[in-house]
Image 1: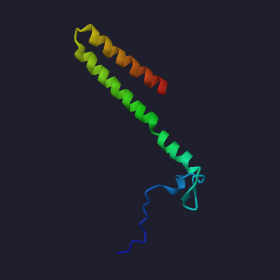
Image 2 (image 1 turned 60 degrees about the horizontal axis):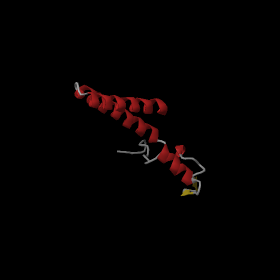
Image 3 (image 1 turned 90 degrees about the horizontal axis):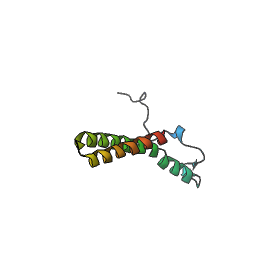
Image 4 (image 1 turned 180 degrees about the horizontal axis):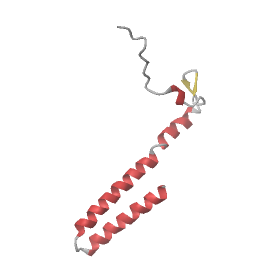
Length: 90
């Protein structure tokens, strides 16, 4: 059995790496910008995920508040702030 047609697999796509971050396979000082960019890139998605979770939690609290006005007001407040957060994120 020959493996000549099997492509090699890499942990990362080397074509997507910014050439300013790496010089001859070694990280450069500009690589710090790349690291910070890689850290900051998923943050909006995580914030959106938390906001959606807060919307779900607020909805459950609204349903379970029943006729208690303080609990209902707190749940609507949570819902409003989570919705404002999503709108500001977009």
